[in-house]
Length: 273
Ligand SMILES: [Zn+2]
Image (tube, rainbow, N blue to C red; front, side, top):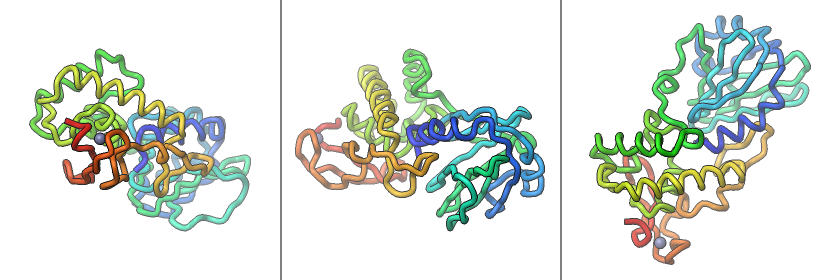
């Protein structure tokens, strides 16, 4: 699933392409992917100019000259790809925006969980309204305080807290495992037992890893590509994620693969306490 570095990479790659484009035609191939209902979605979007693309957590926000926004969520397998000129629709296309100059933006989603919400008239997605802090743009002191406060209130594992979009916006399964490995903290440790010194380390490693993943334009394991259809290459730099039972790159011991908060989880029983 695309996480902060992937969605941000899509945003950066698409922004210079879509900014200033006027939507001439909207084609909806999967009705449940859009809100409000198709007829209103098409009527409201047609003729609008795209003036900006922003990101909050894993949401990509297309800002229109009317003041409305379209909140895209790629979920498991969604891709937003720019196309030059008329191209045949790829299998699993859910939505197409055709622009005045003949270019288009295609939302392709094999697993069909991705969504595009136009608000208003639809209400903003609930997940967007309750989003927590952005790791890369929130002041360190503020973010650390929020993490420690949230940790004090919960008995569950620290990994669950890092994945909680209402606390921290944008981390998913891949980067949560990578951050906890780099910080030396086991994913199943109760969040409230993580020390202040460990939170400091988790914070530092999270910033480093997210920035490095952005430099590498995200992690492409299955479907993820940027807005030009190019894969990222951070999958070649992952330390634990996807390396089930392989030797730890730091100590050589066998990694453990297990379930934490219902999610497949990788960690090193020697390097992480
Ligand atoms: Zn190790």
